[in-house]
Amino acid sequence: MQNNVTPDETETFEPKIIAFCCHYCAFAAADLAGTMRLQYPPNIHIIRLPCTGKVDALYLLKAFEEGADGVMVAGCEEGSCHFTNGNLRAKKRVHHVRDQLEQTGIEGERLEMFNLSSAMGSRFAEIAHLMTDRIRKLGPLFGNESAN
Image 1 (cartoon, rainbow, N blue to C red):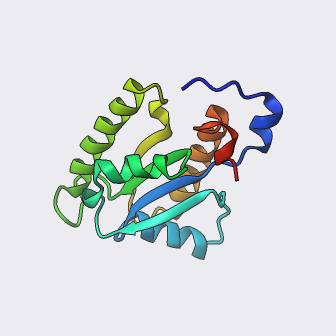
Image 2: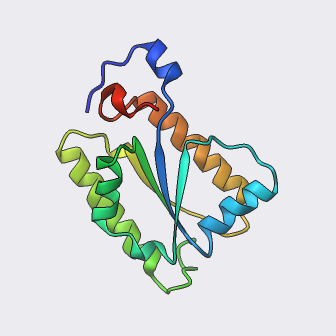
């Protein structure tokens, strides 16, 4: 979706980003980032799941419908899922939803899957910065009404 966002609007726009995080790895990494006192944007709103394999395509789409400018799914490293292959199922769903978004004119880059271990607190903070910067550059999803 092409936005006509001026540079001033981009600088003041603070995106809302929903992060679906698995309990064992990504949520633990976010917790570790906090324990390490690593700074990352407060734009990330975490939803803890037992496994990213529980992420349904409808949850991803509903996050956008409810006002998210970006969505990330963060799970265990590939080959290390606590539920065998839940993260691989989530990866397929994320790719499928990205395709759906692009078919409707919304940038697929607004949705991303990341894999990390529970010991990667600094990587979680890095991902939070990466997603926030990416969505800031893309601008609000539905005009200015989603900029809080």
